[in-house]
Length: 102
Image (cartoon, rainbow, N blue to C red; front, side, top):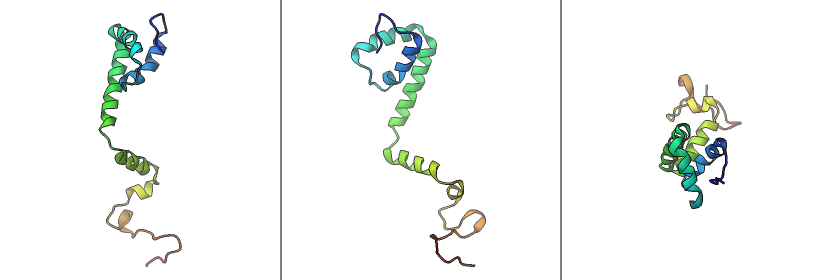
C-alpha cells in the first residue's frame, strides 16, 4: 500500500476508493491524507467517491436487486404498465403456448 517513501500519484489515486469506504489500514491513512492536503485533483476525486459511498450505504439490498433486474429486462417488458395491458393498449401475452384472445 502507500508508504511515505514513495509511490506515485497514480498509486495514490488507486487507493482513494479504499480510503473513501473507510477500509484503509490505519498506518496508511496519514500518508494518504498528506497527499490529499496538497493535491486538489485527488482531494476532489476522494470527495466524490466518499459522497457516492454514503449514497450507496442508504440503498437497501432489495432496491439494488430490483434495479439490476429492471435493467436486465428487455425494453418492451420495461415499458409495460402494471395495469395488465401492454404498450398501446394491447393485452399482455400469456405464457408460452397460451391461447391468444382476439
